[in-house]
Length: 183
Image 1 (cartoon, rainbow, N blue to C red):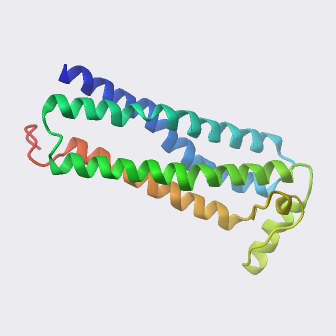
Image 2: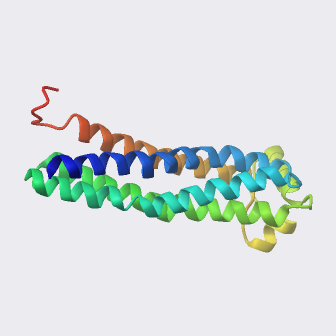
Image 3: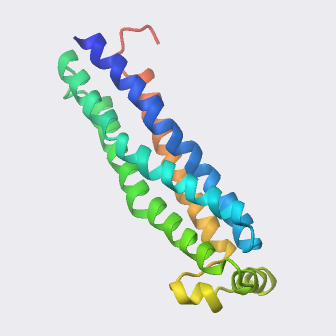
C-alpha cells in the first residue's frame, strides 16, 4: 500500500504543483507586456489563462499533502524531522500562493482588463518608469489597483519564494536524512 500511496503522491505533485509553478512564473512578464500595451487582447487573454491555471491546479494541489500524509503514515515516519519540516514548508508555500500570489495576480488582471481600450495603464507605467514613483490614474484608479511595473516585480518575488519553497520540499523528499536509498 505504501508504494501505491507514494506513486499517487509523486504523480499528484508533478501534475498539480508543476503547472502552478510554471504558470505563476510566466504571469509577471505577461502582465508587464499587457500593461505596456492595454489594447493587446491576446496579452490579456494569456493572463486570464495563466491565472486560471494557477487557481485550478492550486485546488488540485491539496491532493499532494493528503497523499503525502497517507504515504508517511504507511511508512511510519510521521514523527521524523525531515517530514515535519517538509509539511511546515508545504504549509508556508500554500500560504504564499493563497495570500500573496493569487490575489496579486487578480489585481493585475483587473488592472489590465480595466485599462483595455484606454491609455491610462500605459500612462501609469510610463510615469512609474520615468520618475520611479507609484500612483494610479484613469482605469487603474477605478479598480483601486496600482497598475505599475513594481507590482509585477513584487509578484515575481512572491512567485519565486513559492517556487523556492516547493524546490526545498522536493529536495527534502528525495534526499531525506536517514534514508535507506544510499543518498
